[in-house]
Amino acid sequence: SGVSAQSFLHCFTLSSSAFNLQVATPGGKPIDFVDVNESNMRWIQDYRMKSFASPAKLESIDGARYHALLIPNCPGATTDLANSGYLAKILQHFSAENKPLCAVGHGVAALCCATNEDKSWVFQGYSLTGPSVYELIRQPNFASLSIIVEDFVKDSGATFSASVPDAVHVVLDRHLV
Image (cartoon, rainbow, N blue to C red; front, side):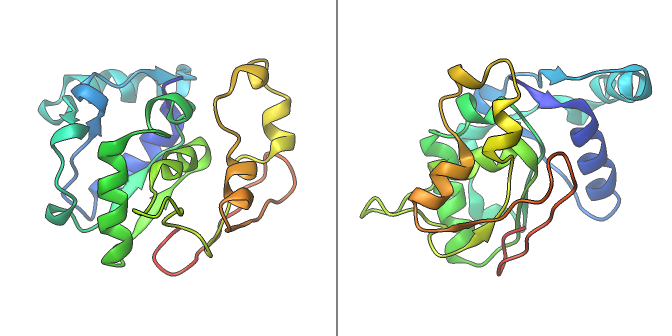
């Protein structure tokens, strides 16, 4: 579970230089950073001391007030976000308005919650990537994963693309990165 410390660090550092950011989590809970190591520990400690480090409640976010959405690599997305009705409304708005959306690594699982009224997936017909089944099966918690993104994407009418395991692989389709 949680959010990859390294991914968050890169996403936040890159984005904050050009945008006013707001971090939101389910219930406004503090971010549970995973994979904290010597190279990112100090940055995480400094981040936690800042006033903007207190996340807003995802449940109170109005997608109309935002111009872009970035979901970092967060292994916890399969449990915390993949079935979130609040995030689904935000994603539906972003999709309808063609606002930029970026999901990184395990954060792609968060997109799975976005269904239309007819139960079709908002991203049906899109091309996207995320952790492949091959990459996931190597994890010790594979058997307990509530969602396998590659299977969900294909079963929901979208195209899944993967590169060699653990390689950087980016797919851009319309407003979705």
